[in-house]
Amino acid sequence: MRMPARALAPLAVALLAATPALAQDGPKIDTGDTAWMLTSTALVLMMTIPGLALFYAGMVRKKNVLATMMQSFTIAALTTVVWMVAGYSLAFGEGGPWIGDLSKLFLSGLAENWDKPFTLGSGDGAVAFTIPETVFLMFQMTFAIITPALITGAFADRMKFSAMVLFTILWSLLVYAPVAHWVWHPNGWIFALGALDFAGGTVVHINAGVAGLVAALVLGKRLGLGHDNMAPYNLALAVIGAGMLWVGWFGFNAGSAAGAGARAGMAMLVTQVAAGVAALAWVFAEWATKGKPSVLGAISGAVAGLVAITPASGFVLPVPALIIGVVAGLGGFWGATGLKHLCGYDDSLDAFGVHGVCGIIGSLLTGVFAYGALSATTAVPAGFGGSFEQFIIQAEATGAVIAYTAIASFILLKVTDVIVGLRVPEEEEREGLDVTQHGERIA
Image 1 (cartoon, rainbow, N blue to C red):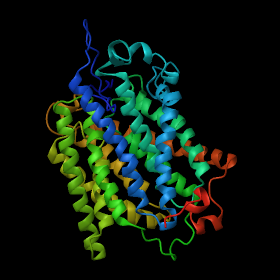
Image 2 (image 1 turned 135 degrees about the vertical axis):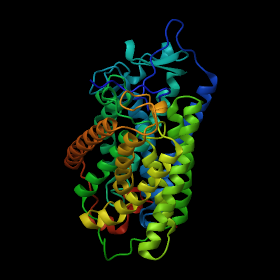
Image 3 (image 1 turned 180 degrees about the horizontal axis):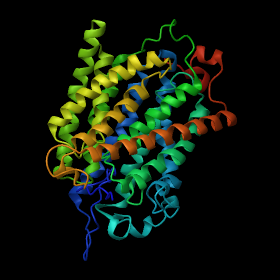
Image 4 (image 1 turned 120 degrees about the vertical axis):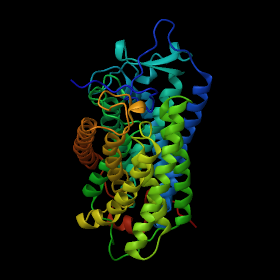
């Protein structure tokens, strides 16, 4: 019988790692942990606005720069409301193995407990935190914001703004929230399976990457792809955005330790190692095959490494992080070039090629490299390295998320198409989304 994973300090909730609730006196709010989590929350929000907004906007054509930024900015505002009204309850309400209940609808119960330590779940499987629930739900909100924002890279240049709004609402409630509950709530079935996902390999990156791939397939290719000039408008914007993503990722991964402790320190260290070596791996692969190392390749490689280390960040040591980064850099390069061209789909900004492919790499390699003293799961022995059993658990969780996200995203895209239509008309796509969707343009 497989036992649930037991991690020492869960949050993003990388909490697939449950620390049993403290007995008798119970946990107390720790001001140091709370301060770190407030900082981490701000860092993760910065990843979307302005980080992802700049990263994506720098890679599209001039006529779509404002529209691309608008997507990230609007998703940040929209998901905030969706999360408060129902998303948080569906993800972190008690519920059962598949989805949370509505006990936290409109953040019900927060008024009575806003100044008390937060416990997720009940009974022997409860997870106790040394931060208030306001900080927990805000940290989780920033994850719920960036995940649908990542999807927009796959359908850049061609989706209606109204369709993006409706799809984001539906997807956040019916795809993101259930998957977050499966993986990070003590009642979730993937949590009980013992799968390790410290900061969102399945919940964020595989989820967004697969949804992006489905969106790219449903919408079809951009007009002019293959013969029009699709060169990025301003790679300098993309580099600035990538830098913000890299820095913000420390909040993403080290913040998922739920406190200012040794686990957060290790998560920060391995995050930096994986990002650095993945950037180099992508650059050298590109240099060897295309003759020149590109700026776009360097920033894409760094993001690939950050994606792959995300599920493993609280569970691995630096040398395995180095290996994960190399595999991610090469895998992301293949996903964004070879795989896309081989299969013929138009993943505009490589949402699947980077986040989907490298999310899968990271999720599986977590099972290979999880360190016993960090992972504290019954499927990983006390010494160095993971186990075949943990690898199989990781594969089951990864496969389940891929299948559910692909099917549900396809259905929601079709529903959105029926209600408001998905794609802008051909003449509007040629003119650009800045003018046709928002009535504005860059001078």
